[in-house]
Image 1 (cartoon, rainbow, N blue to C red):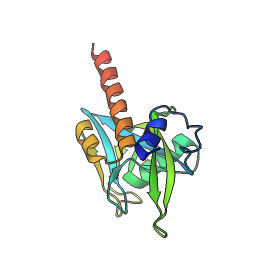
Image 2: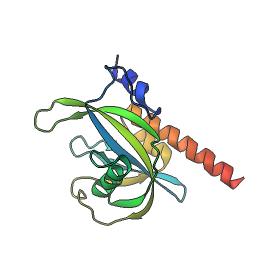
Image 3: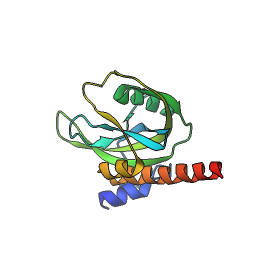
Image 4: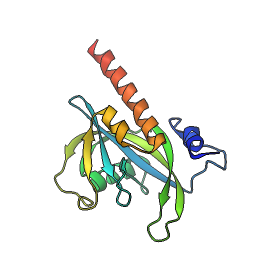
Length: 164
């Protein structure tokens, strides 16, 4: 099973796959930070490869862990939804050994209320707001891209219903 198939097997369902081939070694929790002026999402750069991703990490209870990572990696505070908007998988390269560790990330939405000028990883990471189309173009990971695209469609539909 290729990496695209592995990601598609778990992305968006919010459930972990029972297929052993798809099972990740490391479970992480991430946030999909967003705000409304017009809908925008916040992405951060990875430390090593400088790719655009969402804040994510491990520890604590899922929404609390996601909120902590959002602060540490992007300097943002806000309200994290209790329900995951989906799951994606990727391979994390270990700095010491360059070994790839399969990871699964459960993603929670976060409406951003505050963005700080400094934060713990500000010297290591860039954080930037993107219009949805530009965010999708900037993200290399297909599973994350699909998850964000589905979230954006849902948010646009919800806003359209509220405006009607």
